[in-house]
Length: 460
Ligand code: AMX
Image (cartoon, rainbow, N blue to C red; front, side, top):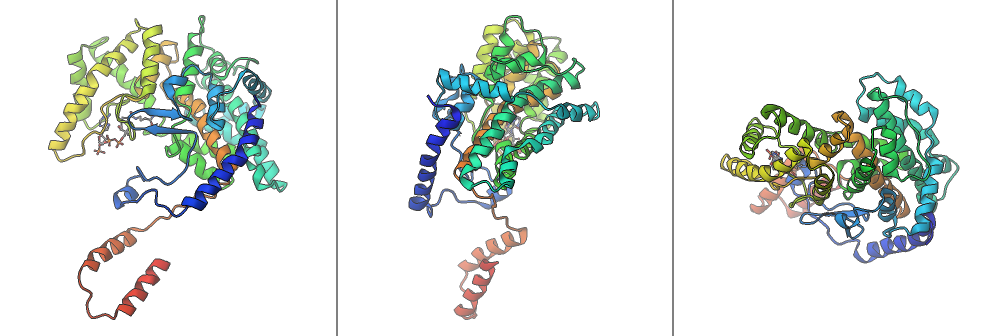
């Protein structure tokens, strides 16, 4: 098989032609209508962008290039990256070539460490990571080629170069952030020939005599690699990249979105909640105690972290995959046992609580099932990674695979600058009022005058 770059070179002309064909044949068809509720509500459910790397089905979860995530859980993370970009799994040769690329690009410039060391010691790990990526912007091949007058059809190639460099360096920087931030020693270096997951686990410097943490890290990176295009980090990265900002700018912006409590930070909240629960009852609580604690959380106005989802309506298959890992490698671990019991109790509690909410005139809870964050923290905790504020960094190392793949493909098809239309509150009030008024018979105004006024408004 060809290398990643050769395969993309073969495929991109067809991908471009297909895009043009779709636009020519279907360009004026309607994908979605937008309600006022959606305009105020984070554009939920509005179909308004294209993403070919993966889809998230409410009843199936994450599907990467047609493969449900659990069917590709044993791939190495770089194979998932290859799949995200090309739609194909690499063969042995393509995998080896990709490994050589990562080995060659993994050296982190010294000024990155100087910058991270210069930050105040209590800087959150996510700020350290995003700073580390941003400060490397001066290395961008895309920027250098662009400044020399790069042709539009080569954008993807320059973007791919930056993507490979960021992906090779981010595990090194992320592991270095862990070691610097938590006083574990100097950053460690990339081992040539080791895959992304094993390298990352190794550079954290935690004991892993049987290689189980490396195994977990591969699974973790695969499961968090992509979640279609509309989530905050992917969408932010896409928007910044659409201005032809390079991958360093775009990815660090995406990481800043991932750092939010409603997105990548939720995994920290989950483990915190589990440990609070165990502390309250002096170990793994009974199901009754768990239900009591859960209702207490909900009635105090907080959410149960790790449960519910904006899109999913079933148990997140990524939860299932990580839960199976826990059952196999740490069945006696009390934190994992607690997570396992929570899974038996919380969906019933949420169901009952949702009825209370509805009775009180509030929205029902749409999904009672666990998402990936309900279990992921307990597994890394088992291997000694107990510093919760770091957990979003783990997520970041993985999610850059999706962000970078989408950036490369968007430059390949020549996605234009993102520019949705916003409307003002005054516009909403006027337009919605106009519709209502339109039902009433018009007063004496001449129809010519009225229509010219309407046209003026539309032209604004
Ligand atoms: N506990 C308590 N209440 C919950 C809940 C939970 N686990 N999940 C949903 N609800 C509430 C919502 O807060 C919302 O209340 P509101 O109408 O008063 O604002 C109501 O139920 C309806 O919400 P929904 O339509 O079911 O979900 P949503 O799309 O608004 O929110 C999500 C989705 C994930 C933010 C929400 O389920 C939640 O806060 N879950 C807990 C946090 C979590 O696990 N986040 C991780 C998400 C995955 C990720 O990005 N990493």
